[in-house]
Image 1 (spheres, one colour):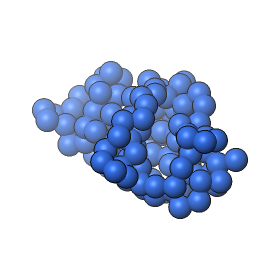
Image 2 (image 1 turned 120 degrees about the vertical axis):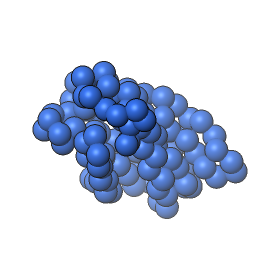
Image 3 (image 1 turned 90 degrees about the horizontal axis):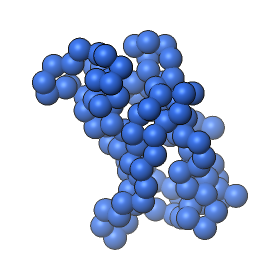
Image 4 (image 1 turned 180 degrees about the vertical axis):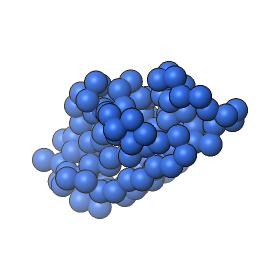
Amino acid sequence: MGRLTTHVLDTATGKPAAGLKIELFLLDGGMVYLKTVHTNSDGRVDGPLLEGVSMVHGHYELRFHAGDYMRATGVDLPDPAFLDIIPIRFGIANASQHYHVPLLLSPYGYSTYRGS
């Protein structure tokens, strides 16, 4: 069964990014809001973002609220922050596979990849 998962690592501290807000949107047929989740103490969400019948072929966007997370952890950010909301757009071509979209984050840079 296919599923979509994510996790966030704060590379500035070398620790999981706990309490980071993430929004999920389906982009096909317009931008459709699907859900909002927050990372746990391990920088992960407590369950898949999508799975089973909700996991469908299409284009998606994850919005990572990095600025709010960094401010909450005491990082001194300029106003406006260089990185605030980080959108990652990706496609699900095969809804029966596992798609993992991790975010490696710091105040002035980020990276992502298709994980396993």
